[in-house]
Length: 180
Image (cartoon, rainbow, N blue to C red):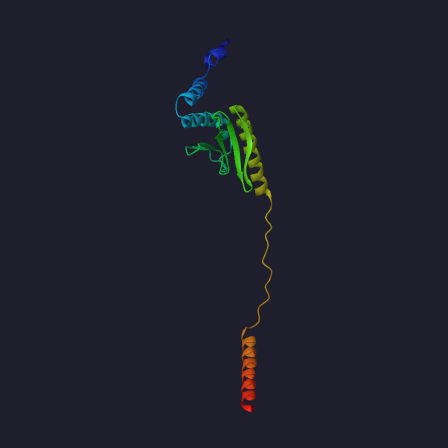
């Protein structure tokens, strides 16, 4: 081991505490899925995946507020990426399923037993959403001035004309009735 790696404590033989904790949680989640309530195992596996997504979400600029990651503990528990995409565990409670709700229904973006594959799918999804946002903001909005509306004519003259025609019709009907 060189002096520089010994000084900062990052040798090959030593694992970081975070990696050890992550491995312990994975092992606990595997044991938990067999021994105790399956829901707790699902939440634990989603928490592990959420931790694996931490580096991705730290890279997203603060000015982009499209993403709101969090775990909902409903039935079934979900790891939300944004308002339309989330990760849910499959029926076997070991398969991650990354889905997106669309106006045509729910689509499965990725499905895998490996957290790394789902992290890659979420990374691609986040990148696509950021690019879509950039395109939406880059499109120049055409400023249209309302067309000049011609000034409407007075509504008094049509009313007077209608009243005159109506009075003439009543007069004609009264004359016809008087002649009979």
